[in-house]
Length: 191
Image (cartoon, rainbow, N blue to C red; front, side, top):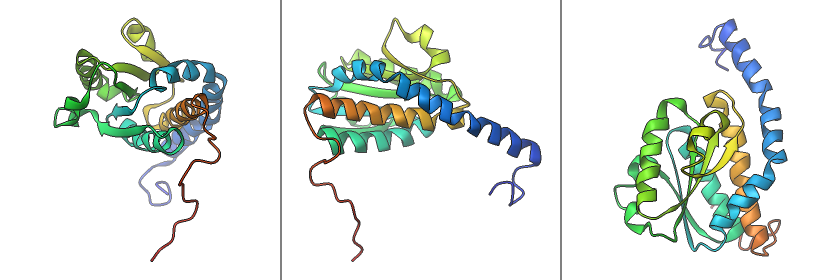
């Protein structure tokens, strides 16, 4: 569309196409690495409440991840833009509250980590989904789940799969049938 509308030139279109071609391999890496996600799912397993935090594209991914968590594991889960935590939600953080954070956008990493550290200082148990390139420096500080390295705008794909797997493992470990979640409407009726 961007090419057809003249927003992108041929070079940008070719670059984007090349970046998109790496997405299937990155998603496969997430699927191959599902044991790591199963391990971090234990942090969330017994929670009654779960917060998911991120900025920019990561926040959008977390909204879907939070919805999946509610649908299949029946855990009260809410996604928040990290910068909004100080406006109320941080009061709900306790030492038994798991917080899932996704950090994939290079330009936002320092602000994001500042917010995550603040939540951790309130006692939250942090599960951090982060690009592989950032993970070594954060491994001693957080429970890490590594995401394959892709350009920032492509990270929505492996991160979405990672959050879906997280919801799957939490649900399966609780003994729920992930293929038949309760009260889920498969059809939307317009009145």
